Amino acid sequence: MAKGHGEILIVTTIDHEDKAEEFARGLLEKQLAACVTRLPKASSMYRWEFSEVTDNPEVLLLIKSHHLRLNDIYRYFEEVHPYTVPEILVFEVSEIGEAYRGWLMKEIGL
Image (cartoon, rainbow, N blue to C red; front, top):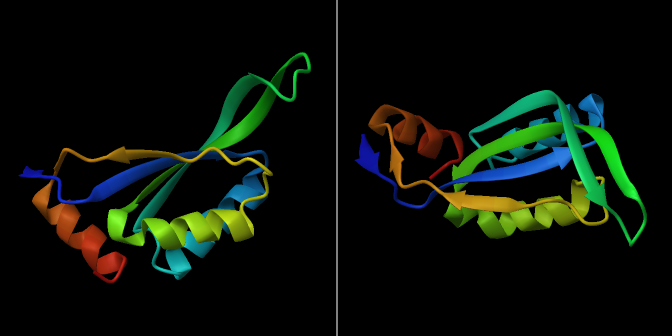
């Protein structure tokens, strides 16, 4: 294991599997992420614009990247994410496998 050097994990959700797959594929094709894990059958409960609490099915996306790609990822979210207010949670990676880090950096062109 090695200390993290700017690697990040981004969490977001999308309401349909086909939209989630398209969104993930775009991140990979643009080299904004090395890997996107899609977890279908998630359920999000929230209150939207002071309405009643809703419980909606969603696809959870775990996006693996590097902070040097973050501004481009933010732009991609603004242009492509289907939600008006997309969830964007960014976690810094404190430790990472050395081989995985090497692969991640190669995949995003750094």
